[in-house]
Length: 170
Image (cartoon, rainbow, N blue to C red; front, side, top):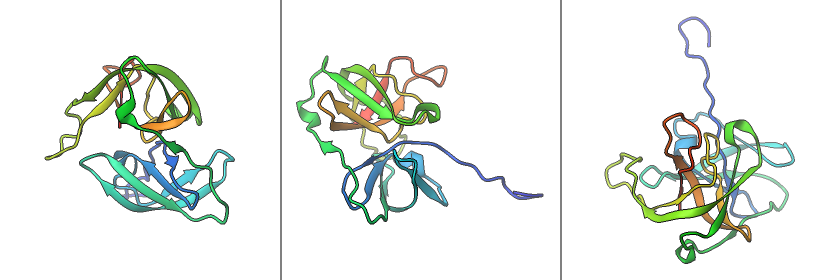
């Protein structure tokens, strides 16, 4: 900051641990333009993360944290087996309320909402009425057994908050 300088900005998002050695998945839009990425774990410890790779066209980013511990991971599920009307859970940090869980049903599959606005963007979202709000982006969408079936990515809203239409990358 300071005179003539730009004040630092921060953003908030969610993610999930995919491997015991510290690979984490989130949305590209959560870490886009980040100079520094800090991951806060459920035990409140914080770790600097490196951006390993990202794909703007699918809005996915892979982060890596270094730790001496084996980390708890999420079990991948099969989003192809997901059915409209099935119950799902959206996990994340909406508005900074860490480790929040909301429940809803799958409202539609294969939804293209033209949100990524990137040439050759990949859009085939799972639509759910589980409450998804700012801060949920990058968090897990799971089946009722806790298996990963999507990445919470977007909401349709006129107010900026949940209106019962959320979208996840399968």
